[in-house]
Length: 356
Ligand code: KG4
Ligand code: ZN
Image 1 (tube, helix red, strand yellow):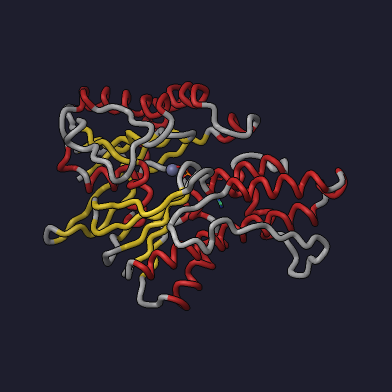
Image 2 (cartoon, protein in one colour):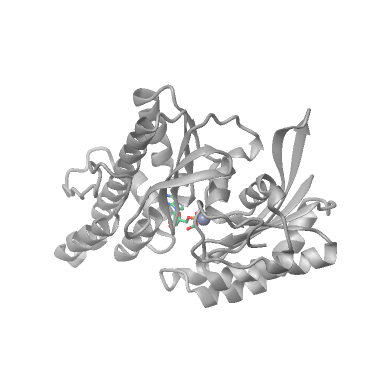
């Protein structure tokens, strides 16, 4: 079976075609035949964030080209299903993908599977040879718009245990990078500067808060961290603010503060729920230091729990993950004419056959 998937929930225009291989009616692998991502980063960089109507216009402009490229790279195969992200995300952007899916479905006489973007991030862990995840699993989804701890009892069964009360972890990276004048998206910029920090840099003893780290709930808060960075930045002289020693030290401390909170809270949740697996997902999961420290901590503290992270290129937005989610939700297919965008869709909300 081959699935064509479309993802336009934010500022990346993505189309992918995947092939599902089965053996004795069990899924063996999700092979990516093409995975085209057209990033709008340069366009939004000058504003330091994403402007929905600008992003929508870019999606409309890019989609025909991205589609052509994805089909060509995959060798123009016969498609069996179309999957499209319907939420959460920026509503005008979501509609561009849905409208393309509708047009294709009509032309190719194929069903459309609506996909939840957060579920897609989670199942990005299955791309390639399908891993055998043991349940219950605790999923940490960390992206530009979400930071959620989710209990996954089995595929398709999710319960949100906690989430951020203000900014998402990726949003915090982005906002702090803007304060430090490093550009957009902030996560990769901060990670690059942090990696340059020499081991012995005692010039700027910066200590940022680890918000809500020891609280008993499963929620997060990152806006205080951003404010702490702003205060520190403002009290420095213009010369210090621009010095590479200060920037590197500050970036390393921001990254570590976010990592400390994410790891501590996830491990606590995993212990509380006796999780057999821990699943990391979302754009921030591409962070090398986070991946390394997570793996080490899990091995030391809960070695009975298996740890999954997608390949870095499938952590940030892409349509291959949407195709995999489409496959798992294929039974919920319905009338493609009724599929609609839902900007605030939650992972524990039904959206399959009920809404389409
Ligand atoms: O999942 P994603 O591509 O889009 C959303 O669904 O939001 O995540 C984008 C977020 C951005 O905030 C970006 O700064 C962050 O992921 N990000 C990173 C890294 N790469 C992307 N954060 C930290 N380290 C990275 N290497
Ligand atoms: Zn995303």
